[in-house]
Image 1 (tube, rainbow, N blue to C red):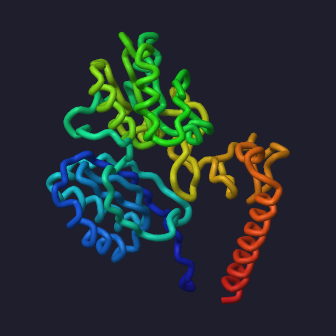
Image 2 (image 1 turned 180 degrees about the horizontal axis):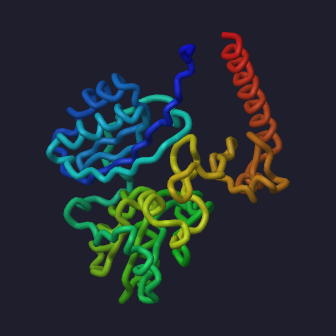
Image 3 (image 1 turned 90 degrees about the horizontal axis):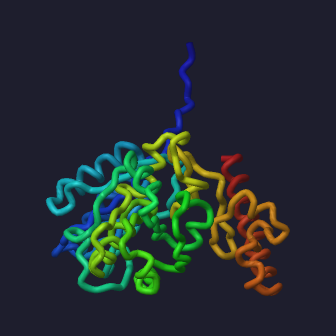
Length: 311
């Protein structure tokens, strides 16, 4: 029996992780962490700040397991919140470890989510909470993320960035009074910080989805789910759906807005050039420029494919 030379391609393991923790020496963690990841073929982005760590990385199953063990061994980071998924191909181009003022930027000083966040709600208990008529459910993500999917009945603050969220809360304080406030986000980090902020205003019944939408989609069966649509993710997969399967959304390469199947049926959609979200805001000159850029990208891909086929 002849030997096979075909090597089975393993799917890429993706880990979205964060932990609010007081890191006095966060600057000193940067170089060793970058070396650890690069030495194991891991790509993605990790953010370090005095308030903790946040990021999404991808690599082989063994490499990602080694990284999580390495981070868990740092005393302050023990108990990381991690969500795993897979990708058919590496969804990142390089590895970056960055130092930041905040691991998720809200722009509010003197918040300590590590000690003052709201009450965690497990994915299995989330449906009962948000189905309660006394609960105000708030999507803390940005409008372009909400556009392709959210929880049934959730309020969309229509923010362009997380920095706008405190202002939205201030404007809608009366709607929060006397209610249970339940917040959610992609992986749990933004809503954890959001609950700390809302609690700092004096609200007490404040809850957030532990592990975010990603953990909910991984653990709650589709037939029991109150999630509608897909969940935007910040990598080349664009979106995921129930079971964290890669979704059908694509990015508009002109404005970076996620596009549903319906968006791509619009007469305002041209691959690499325009979509319903940016068509009115761009000029014909802009679209001509995007069309030429897209043509160059397609040529580069074609040249790369030919080199690959002939190699």
